[in-house]
Length: 424
Image 1 (spheres, one colour):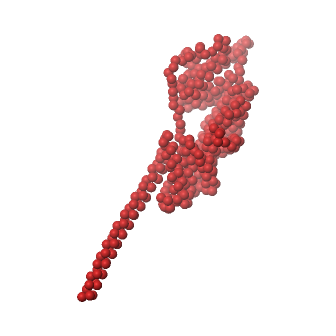
Image 2: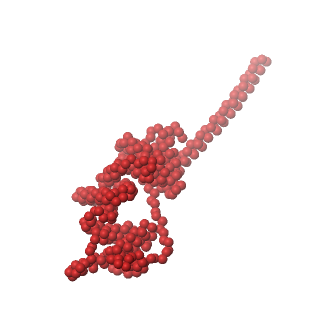
Image 3: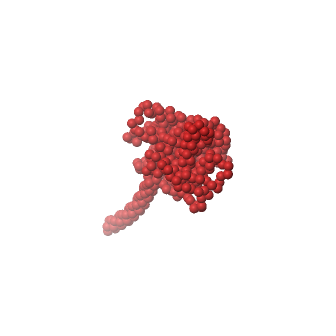
């Protein structure tokens, strides 16, 4: 294929957003529960859960509540979502009961249990976690849980000093809830200018909460803060890439993620996060390039081709040592789209082949999008067709040579006959 001008005419996917969705395998070891779970669903569809074996005899209600909540978080991180939901419902039920008792005692003028910031943190986080596990058919319920969660976490934020070990989780939860609620608000195509301005303010508050979360965590564990920064950056990048907050919202989110990545020290060879940092920086460049890609006119011309190529080349440089499935997929997409911009057929062909190599590595370790799979098949089919065409041309050349040789021999014989006649 090298040097073949036909390479430039082949249609290749532009601006591919192939993202392999990873799913966590659900697991349940079937071991007997260490606590007695009493199914006591009330009007709020929650469960009463009593822990009998893991608590000290003098444990108070807040300790018991925290025990239920911690068990729910353990099950959630372990992948047993069904059991986690039961424990989360129990947590919410107990929080609701404690609040009712507290309000009743206050109204009666008797000594009431102290409502600590920790209580609101547990209540809000349980609501947020169960909203994440809501079934698709319960979409309305999910938003109700999110709004309630936001209210409780705001109460925790107002009551805490900011030095509590869970403070960073309060800020982090508020930021994530803010983004979820904003996504729903901005999905309204008929949003007014006033609503758009309000959304911009909410977006600023959201990134501020993320900042507060990372600062609070860094004061406790600098290494964990670094890991959390990268996790949050990846999540915010995905939201920006989805464009569900509009072009302006996505741009602000990208500004924030790039500032966070720029603030990190340049990774060394010994840095366990080095590959992830390079991947996220490359992904930021790719998302910026995708914005330009989305501005193509009817002639498929990119408005600023030089800037587009510069962004992609910088991304490629960061992905030289790509090893993870995500990094290989990103590098393949970058090389494919960079190939689409080439005028030189040989260079385009080289980039396409590099992209296909990465896509095959991705496919060997999981699924590959239908569009990319089709691209590989079409490219290899074109390759086979050209090879077959070359073989046919080679055979035709040999046949023509044979014919010429025969003609030559016949001509030579004719000449000999003429010479004999002259002699006679």
